[in-house]
Length: 290
Ligand SMILES: NC(=O)c1ccc[n+]([C@@H]2O[C@H](COP(=O)([O-])OP(=O)(O)OC[C@H]3O[C@@H](n4cnc5c(N)ncnc54)[C@H](OP(=O)(O)O)[C@@H]3O)[C@@H](O)[C@H]2O)c1
Image 1 (cartoon, rainbow, N blue to C red):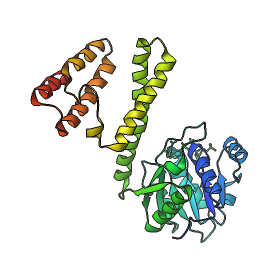
Image 2 (image 1 turned 60 degrees about the vertical axis):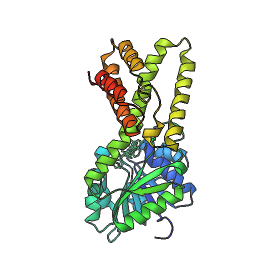
Image 3 (image 1 turned 90 degrees about the vertical axis):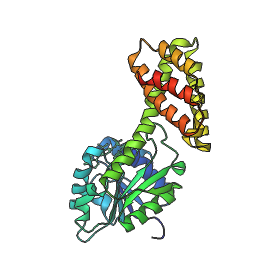
Image 4 (image 1 turned 180 degrees about the horizontal axis):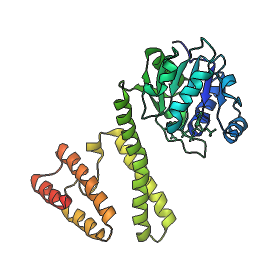
């Protein structure tokens, strides 16, 4: 495929749909959007999108459509779209749900539409400008023509793509990893900030300081594999400090268990990297197995 498919229909103008639609519109594609609620439609219109009140006009003439609907509504939306297409119209159909493969678009495939997945691997909060799409990667899958369209759509945003293996299992595994990383980091940051707040006399500064720490860790991960990026007492084989940390968490069983679990992985990374000797390894294994 040469160039992104256009006209393009965006169904579901929530956090993801309206940001993608705007990105593609700014890239010069002809985009029409539709969303069931008037609130979402008005918001998207106010941001400068062409929005149709009904589904059928948004689909009319579309060569490609992207379903950006909530996960639980995906099958229903695919069924609705399949019914609303003009006779003989068989656009390339993509969805943005990370943990589903193409089977969610079965009603559209049954109408002869090429089907695929387009999952922007970025965090789209409901408020704010949204992630920098030009820095994002998008996971793509599906029929060859759907993958080609998804690649061109990513290129139009300045984003890069990587292919997923076929099948529902691959999509689920990929999305589990993505959710663990992105959302797990938020949860871990919140736990660390709670601990720090009790220790710092300037909680606001502590927040900024911890975010700067997170950025420096990310910079290490950008430069090197996790084995090499790891710092801290476990990576140094420092059992005394780990024992002191655990003693300090004695009244916080949840944080203590989390500390142990993550430290066991740190120990495995340090061992793989040949950074700690057998004696330190045994001492830390003993502390962390309890
Ligand atoms: N948020 C993220 O960070 C992120 C990142 C990558 C991928 N995704 C995936 O992208 C998809 C959309 O996520 P989101 O965060 O944009 O969710 P969202 O903000 O909740 O938006 C979902 C949209 O789906 C629309 N919708 C619901 N049922 C529909 C139906 N039957 N037909 C047409 N539209 C329907 C809703 O319309 P109304 O508002 O009009 O009711 C809503 O605007 C999900 O599959 C999600 O997993 C999310």
